[in-house]
Length: 122
Image 1 (cartoon, rainbow, N blue to C red):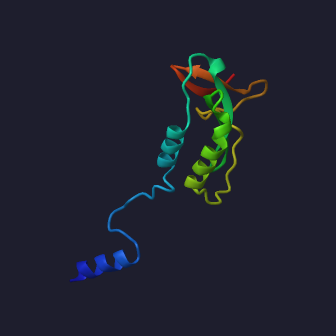
Image 2: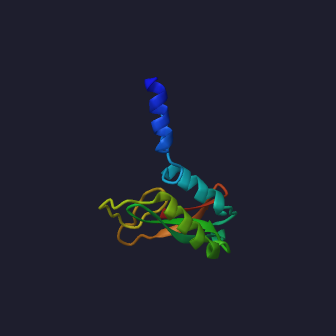
Image 3: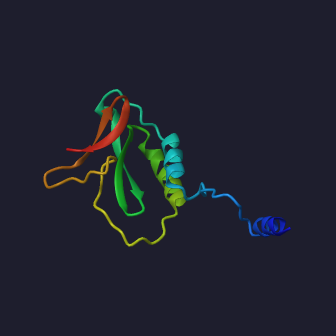
């Protein structure tokens, strides 16, 4: 009886007795959806351009196939809405996709690695 009552209460509150991750805020799901929506194919580094993305603490420059960057702002908007970043009080300098930050005299550049556009610090 107690188990049935608990199940009814959870159902009434929209809860669940399992630990499901909310797909709207799971960063891995958000990133996978963003990746599915962009074209990163390349043959040479000239095929790649930088676009600005963000995590919950700052900017991360990513690379997409040249010519597709005009569609990226809508993809980024969906990605950021999915992340639903709460106020975290954190901030980091602009980063490349591998998490590196340019030092003095360096910059983030788009490159083609194994047929995929990505960013690196050079």
